[in-house]
Image (tube, rainbow, N blue to C red; front, side, top):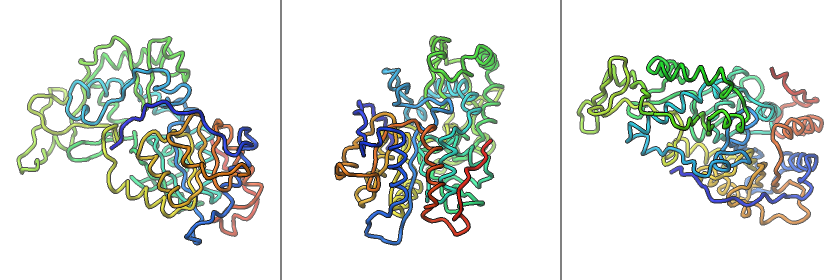
Length: 409
């Protein structure tokens, strides 16, 4: 079950001490990625990357616990829980109204240099798989730009590294999904339906866009203009009556009502415009295709994440406080198997002391590292450093020449 961890996190401990500087951190990461750890299974030399919301901040998206994160700046913020969303029509109106306002900025966001450096590391052969917590919207978009095949679990790079898998641990925001029949619905099409059902809200959205309140990536400027931007494309407008907002029913359930567990057909009622109506309706509710707080991760996803860890030799965490147990337990699982753990995160990390307590003063990064640097500034330089060393661990002979980062648009 995914619940928010809101306890204060300690300041990051820098290991090794040289990693306090960017150059020192790059040296430690280079040692971390290129050294062969002493593991029971001598046949594996794979790095799993675990990313969080922190890797997407430079793309204009809000995070939870960073210096300008939602939990940091808004102590009263409380995300909607799964059981509330499913049971409460008013709560769904509020959620979809705020998501409607936030989607435009989320949809136009683009991968930043940190995402592109991750893709380069994959092409170079340093990553065996990626587990992302950050709704993988930007990672998926980057894959889309690279003509990758994207599925619910795996993302394959057909040109350079077909074995690089991307597991979306907490789902993704590019679609809505029916809570009854599990049919997915493209999020942009859903946005268009929301606009058609809510013309006054659509006009308000256009006004916000014209004022720059939604286009600016500065959270202070957004607050000055009367908006609070939360993670996952959630925009709060103080004083607005969310009860007027309407959302559509699942088209699949509406066309062919499914049966409940007792064999009785569900009821889906809509108004004249197709908006879901409470009262007799028992199905056809669309939710974002993410794992909400209080919602369990599917067994298939959990098993795939555990397998990715078990097949690896080390884990590198980027931009995550590991505040959600679903992510923290994966790093704990890796450490229990003796794997080196690397963490790059500006703020504190939940229970990080147990991942590094075994490291001595003379650690160089090979057996683990912890640093706090801006990812979009550090990772591209790491790519350059590794490219100059020609030490790709699972690269073919065709890659045994100086690496040139992809000419990203």
